[in-house]
Length: 398
Ligand SMILES: Cc1cc2nc3c(=O)[nH]c(=O)nc-3n(C[C@H](O)[C@H](O)[C@H](O)COP(=O)(O)OP(=O)(O)OC[C@H]3O[C@@H](n4cnc5c(N)ncnc54)[C@H](O)[C@@H]3O)c2cc1C
Image (cartoon, rainbow, N blue to C red; front, side, top):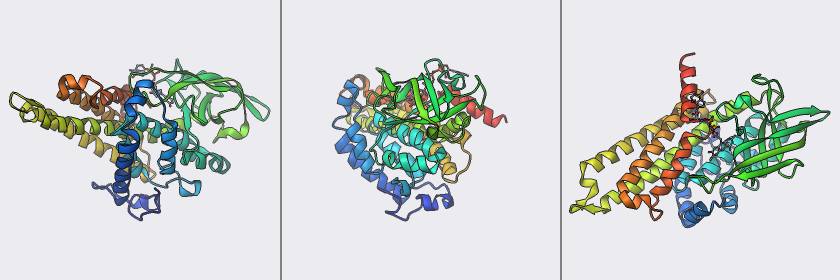
């Protein structure tokens, strides 16, 4: 799957000309159809087993790499799909509509690790890492969060000290998607004074580098097939050629990476909401109580109406942020608004879906229980809802 297979609006070549439109492009339809078939045969039959046992299905991601899903935004010259944000959002939504865990891992790989190297790597680094990441040969990780510094990432304690042509990194990162399995990680470290906006630097570090390893794997409420683990650096020596962009630019880079990443977490939330809604709608027409389908009770019908309204509003906000991204414009406010709204909607819709299923919704025999657990991550990862409100209010009060 790549942007040269069709010449429809939305491919990178003409993304900048594309006005926000309200119908799917041919590319988006093609992505939707392909992923629906893929998810039906490759994800659905196994996802509860992966969820139950916290299995991160690496082989699935290799297949997704072959399909072009691991380098959606990466230009074709680096073996990527060369698509824009409309296609990226569509792909995350369609995967997450079936399994949030796979959607989360796909989003973290594409937006964070790959996205950071794509935006801030030099030509040599792009040639070295992007083709492997874009084809799924390598899985990427991105480490910003630490045990004591989540929302307040600027206070990070992981330190890099220069030693000739090398940097020596000490510290650990927590909650890192693919912290153990990732073949390469972008790691944000302190290279200056505490709270100095020029005091943070990003490094790209390969698995196998001495002093660099994965640590404890988290046992999570939801998103259980997406690996979340500690990343540990102990006297980890990396050559200065592994610095991404300029020394001291890391925090600004990370914030830009998150502007795009938040659109993908919004899409993840939307996909989960759509999956939960589809299941609840179907069930409400089948389940009978008091001699008629429960969808005929106004309490249930109005719940479905609220769910549908929120889903459509979230979708519009996400594509509005995606539109700015495609045009190369600043999207800090719009991506935070989309992320905030879509992730809260995800939790609300998944909660309502469980309610519509009644007791059956509380069991693992029906899909809404998993959507309910998975949805909560969306209001936390890549900045909590409170932090999104902080970002939005700062932007509007400027
Ligand atoms: C499954 C999963 C995957 C993740 N993947 C990654 C990854 O790949 N890479 C990575 O770097 N990180 C990752 N994270 C970390 C994630 O980004 C953080 O958990 C998140 O940013 C919140 O940080 P925290 O958990 O330390 O919470 P805290 O910052 O401790 O926040 C606790 C509570 O306080 C609130 N709060 C904090 N500051 C303020 C404030 N100023 N105003 C109002 N309220 C505030 C928060 O909103 C929250 O409700 C992942 C997390 C999870 C759960």
